[in-house]
Length: 303
Image 1 (tube, rainbow, N blue to C red):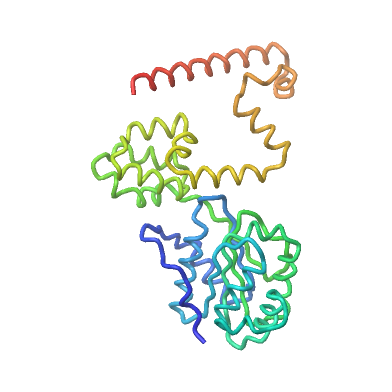
Image 2: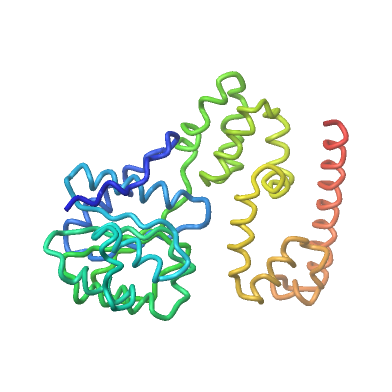
């Protein structure tokens, strides 16, 4: 039974990450039963997983790709449909039980890729489902992409932290739109931080004749504003990511974002030997902050 036909097409602008791709391709044929790809929003988890799926398919490996779902039941429905077609709906058991039973009976090695599982991981039965497959479905290997680590503990789990792309890889993604403005290429790559979703957003802006000098200034001075105005998907993903932060971390992030005006001398004293040093440092920081604000206002006026 061939079920690799449900693998999505690879994006035309995908930039290969051979080192990490090879790492996973070496782990899967060995004793690794579960690969967990962890990364921030927009870092390219989905396209990376699709790439691995195609590499596995070239080796005649059976692969089931399950796109992002909101419940474990929906994930299991996708698995059962890939394996059985419409026939899976004739069973009496619930979807999770049917999927668990079917996968435990498989006689051919199968890799199940579950994309963006972070929301489903909040459900109590997700870890139980993964643990059951590791123990009772010997022919099944799992690969999931997620923004958060899984709670399942096993020596058979291999975790990969997918990092942002380096400057050279970022430049490959943007090279076509910088044919006539190469002097801004390196700067944009650095300011985008190697995050593919942000890089692609900038690529489409530039393809639509967005001024590269203005783009650099915007990325340097107010990147969230340009993302919000030109890519609601990016902005919403970043917002969802930040909402997951604990309350105390969000409070400290807000304080740091308006540093140093909201810090008191007592807050800063732990980093200095005397209050005189504190006051001197704070005065310098405030002056620098004021100068930066004036510079930004002047630049905005000129533009």
